[in-house]
Length: 149
Image (cartoon, rainbow, N blue to C red):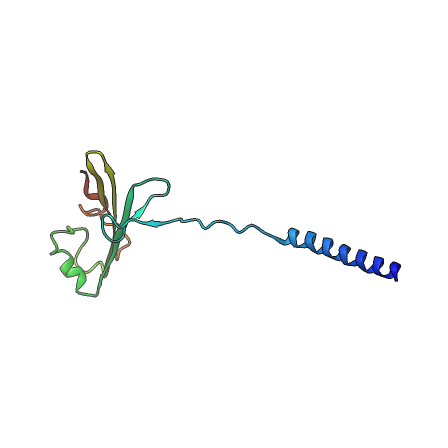
């Protein structure tokens, strides 16, 4: 019985030690949660903190698409003072315009108060039915508002 209990004790000790090592190998450290975007409530809705700074940023804008067409479009095209005369009446059957406005508003607190920079930039594009690109005063890139306060 002495040998039998010695064998059983040794087997039990071997299983306990092996199980402990296996459990240690399976333990995986969980990654800490990373906060990519923090909401900035100080200046209203839509602002977020730039990573690594205390500057709040709000990005916005809009897209506008105008499409006009038809047989009567060529006749009324010459009467439009904003577009200008580019061809004879009835030559163009459609016209489209696209405008994209990008607004950026950045704010941060300084020892003198709030430092704000704002810009609203317009991107305009126009094409007529003859395939020519319009070059009136509205085409291209323009800055509607830009200031530092």
